[in-house]
Length: 447
Ligand SMILES: Nc1ncnc2c1ncn2[C@@H]1O[C@H](COP(=O)(O)OP(=O)(O)OP(=O)(O)O)[C@@H](O)[C@H]1O
Image 1: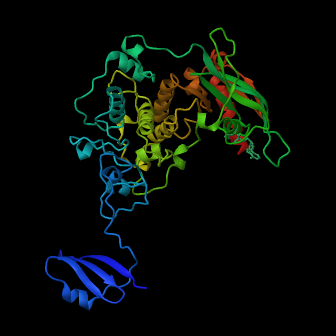
Image 2: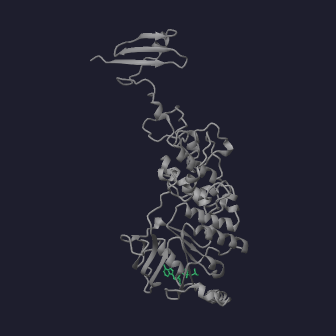
Image 3: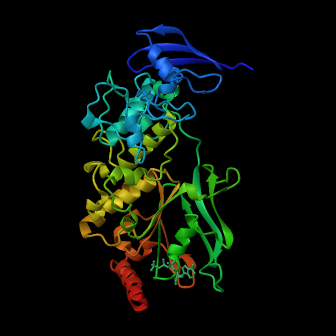
């Protein structure tokens, strides 16, 4: 049986030869450039298979785009058609950290390059551009959009209060969420650690309305941190439920209670700075804050949402009319977290939790280990956070937190919780100090 091959040869010098080879002889059918007789004779074609495909396939231009930033083109040097996700050089280099901040704006100076967002915004609707611009400015980077977007007062109010800006907002009627309020409810919770015989917590019940500040105090070893861990979903109660119940204005429950899941809770442990990422050349404040963010999701809206959360966590809005939230706007997001002062490290820990926009923020000894100035700063910060968040703190610093407290409970030894209003104790001036001394003396005796 006679076999036949058709071979297309491209010489690097630009010569082209088209071979037709049969099992008994080889001949050049057509040539371009100088004759390749000698080449053909000295290098008889090897059996390469019945069909030799020419060169790499030309991909449609849409498939050459970077999957992280649509305004960069992937280098087409070594295309791998089987790879569905392809990144441009910049995104590949920064893969560990985040996608590049290509906004598709040629006016963006490299020094002001946004580090959080990517995606083309030039064609985005004005509302989205505005929100992203606010987020960019909040993280200390001025996005160079043209033309500049100036928010209307109604839009700014809506953005500031975290509501979506709808048509009704534009006409001056800002839509308000359904009336009523929600409340954290701990219902007869008991906890016994696995493998032990004794309950650490016994039939604990407490209610805390949204946007209020609750304080847990009590002697060391009474079980306050254990209760926080249950609320944060780090351990499961042996009995009882922890849920969020919605009520209407007249105080009647609206629908069944929702279980409080770990995703809805942020917890800042005692001395959170000790849990920061280990030292590395790439470690920055921004990395600390965005450490838990999903890396793979490149959806623009998703990233926009995260950026807005970051904006809310760090700084309310750009102008001075709005109060700063965590107050990290005084420092660069490129700074090494280890070089921050104690107060700023505490703020950073709060920002990390607030980015997740939790329903409930749990703080274990938020003032521990800080000097008087940093303590005053953190108290002011908590006062600010209370306007938007429900906070439950464990602390021995009753006098400093007293102005913030809406409800307070004393945890007694044996894991029994009793409500005890601080306002009653402040009446005779030194009473709070006595409570503190009592708690701290007990702690020292315990040690
Ligand atoms: N998994 C566990 N198994 C057994 N005992 C535990 C467990 N977890 C905590 N305990 C004990 O429960 C008690 C309460 O601990 P917890 O840390 O909740 O106290 P605390 O009131 O927060 O104290 P502090 O104010 O010093 O932080 C402690 O005696 C502790 O040893």
